Length: 231
Image (tube, rainbow, N blue to C red):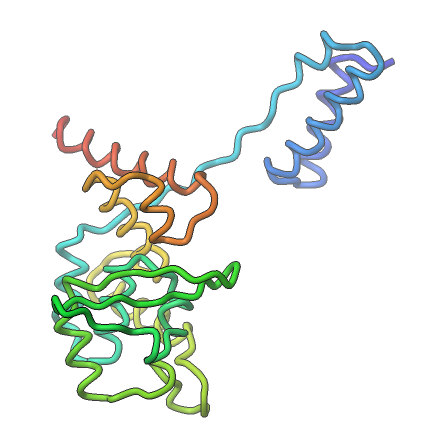
């Protein structure tokens, strides 16, 4: 007969023996609830709890430090890449797949860049204002005609993300912080939340379709505010 003890042992088996993640366990719990209701064991179904997914904990660097790193970086190509990731919040693969025709300078001096979402292939636009002069210098210096950041070894191919990751690894050691491309994306999103942009606008700029990451960004922004108040 099915009882609470049987269910508990089964879920422990899935978690400890099968090493299922909370997201996978939730599928089992949902199915069990449906089954128990189907056999008129509603009370038992209500005792089942969905396992909570652990939220990723991000230790975000100070924006001033990232701007200092960008400023001190001597290689113009990588300086521009990091600046674009930091200011736009785009994924590193999206930045490296930008083509020259995707970049448009406005009459006001800032840049509008078409980004092709690396996950669903849809297009969105991001804007470069703070680092517009840096981007302009890069364009004038290298005059790219295909990919904005072409591969030095492969014809008609963009720079590989691994090159950026290796650079950030070296910079992590130099500045004694944890640094990787997606962290810059998280930092930009959190800054946009602090600036008061509406969530739907931030989701559109970053290419998010789910509100899950937005909740994390809001929590990160709230955590920073709390630290300032309590310090």
